[in-house]
Length: 523
Image (cartoon, rainbow, N blue to C red):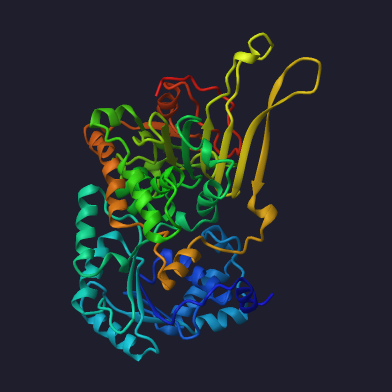
């Protein structure tokens, strides 16, 4: 089916005519994710015919060389190893049409000159709508917003919109997040700000809401009466690759927890919103993050584990340890792994621990939410050969094998009463055609159409950092890092963290639970 016919059959409106300005256009994010996403949107007929994309950076390019630079990367088969799309194939005709949208202006976005040129480009367009995308280092976010405000480029007149998209990390602690929010809100309104987290663009993340609220099977049991604990994992097999300079200043906690992992926590823990609109959903997410128990630094230290990968084997290859990676300070105290326990102190979740972990050079690539239900009462089986009741698990796999799996107990065939865990699952690829996407398509389209539902609001950002701050404070008092060999799933201290509560980590890379009956009353 042709792209335009596919769009019409699904009745998805075309985004408004606008000019999209990308600051930091020569960076890795643009070629790996943003341009492929825009190409896919154009392929599917979702971009207005007059829409323009203007890259801005210091690198020497003109329109032609910018287009060639991007095409060369996307056409390279090796690009599939670097981009999150499922393939890197380009249709020559589709790319040729899409490339005509691409333009480039060389300039320093920390200086005022380039903003005068941006104003001229907007005036020359068929629409005064403009989206400004900060695909830059986080240290430039506030400066870009201030320059846009000073140039009058954020003022909205005659029904035309001006929007700013900000990547993560949004601050590096609570104080810096508050400062950045204040700097942005000084020159624009909250409805103009799109704080992007590409995890929220993934189909399985959005399906959490549908699974919970569109199926009567789940919601009655989605509380502390039936759920023992919840684990959220974001495991990576890669090391720091070409991001050493950024990563060594950031670490696993700042890179992943207050944004990606807390967004997953919020999606799984929210109360039913009054409507599936931006304000209603973001109100509930903010309430969840605000309800995370504020540990003291001493409590945070006791409820967390930090690790750093050492040399090891990944598949058939020997890989170096973090301190031996190119660009990493040999005296670095940066963590590449973090595990933590948090409590959400509201009526629904009181007493239910949330265990979060993320790390690099782990045994498998795996982002998932593992929900462990309390075991059924044992009383009726006490005079049988059944020793204990295993827990039921619901596994929501975000990547790479998107889907949901449920573990439940069944009797083994035979004369004796013996139980075993059986698995019932749903994989997206078995039911739906999954096109080549990066995860940014939904978010970029939503920004172009003015839907903020999947974007973070200022209070959500600050509530996330408020929950993380005690851990950061605790770690300033101790530089202890537990080593773990590359290819293993974190240090022993992370296993000790959860085993103290009578529980075990769900196996990384497996859509089924470990079948461990949790010890009650140890949270």
